[in-house]
Length: 308
Image 1 (cartoon, rainbow, N blue to C red):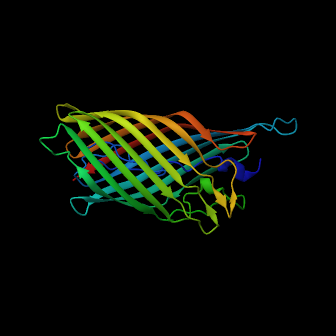
Image 2: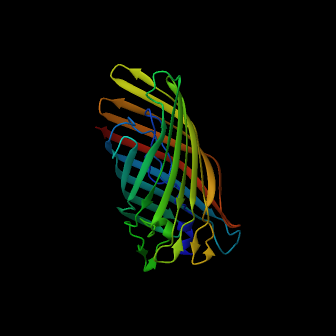
Image 3: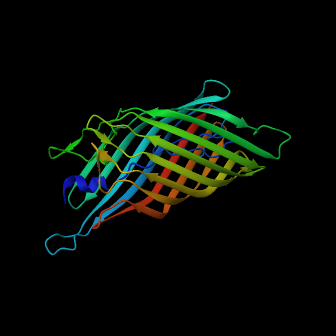
């Protein structure tokens, strides 16, 4: 199997994240960035977040001359991120990721680490009845957009050959993000739905990652226990990506879609919050050729933030 093949099986689907919402409820996914449940929506915060996504690729040539091939690929990322209010209705997010990628395959074994692509986002509050004393149902609607900068390396080599674009630390392109988040809450129970779209441009290698779309919905419940507050949540997450292009040629084994079950819990105490989120694939349909298969496996996010 050619070296570029293994890594082309991996999609850049979820980006870092940090969501936006009101009443401390769930946030939004922005084309590869998952926000999760944000702490105290009316406050600034800074924090660290660790995320992990695993993929498995298998290739069966069905030939007596070529054996079966596989690759287990793990993407770990540690992010410094924060949210800052520039006015009562406008908030700005910043994400600075540091990635640790590990490809363990029959034909190629690579480990990379370094600064990833920095993302800047802004959201505006279009509707907010979260503090209303007369409304039984609390509604929040936010929308915004942002930009992803090409700060991560995209020219890493292995054995003198350029590593596949999917395994680089950055895409090498300036990309644009759009998002919207709607939340409805009744007393301690609520539902959050969010959507995000990522528009990718060509990099200096004339390579363009396919545009990405995310849609998710989850129920949540708020519970206070002495000095702690807990917010368990569960729902579904959908993601899809178009095929990548080198020049004008669509690349095989790129793009596809998946539906994942998501569950987690947020814990708040004074100015600190700790969150854990887990995603498990339920249905997946990644583009692959006749001899290949691609599987998305479990994903984790653990975050610690300080609110002020």
